[in-house]
Length: 216
Image 1: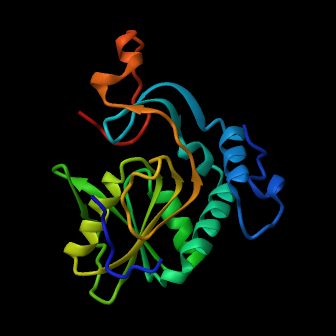
Image 2 (image 1 turned 45 degrees about the vertical axis):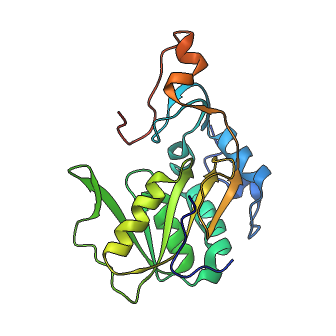
């Protein structure tokens, strides 16, 4: 089911991304994919995603974002795509969304907050607060099912804030995320399977959980 928003408008070079991209204000799909490959962040194997789905491919954004220059370039590119929504604060789910959320906020010139789990529930902690006048942009590294994106949206809404949209570096949902106001730098479809339908499980291939979130 579609999830709407409160205000819907339509081994790398140590110098980082700008060493090979130049200083262009935008980044296209080829740029982003090349950056993932150069960083060793495009992995092949048998993975259990944060959504609980299994996949033969995994995008380890932490390897790209480990280089501050690359992180800043990606954040600036995402900020350029969402600026028209006029966000006043960025909210990201911990752990994967924290770095890119901070860099998008830097590009927009707004605050960067994150939500984290307490007793299994995503919530604001560490003195972070949102007000009714806040226009919240939810920022993630990768969106697959958009489950954590929706959870983060609900965190903002429970605080009484207005959610204007969401964005991520990579959209690997194949267009099934159902988010109304959403932007991504890279559209990438990698096969996903429910555990009971996973061909690698059927072959007895060991599964790896590479992300930061524990799944059942």
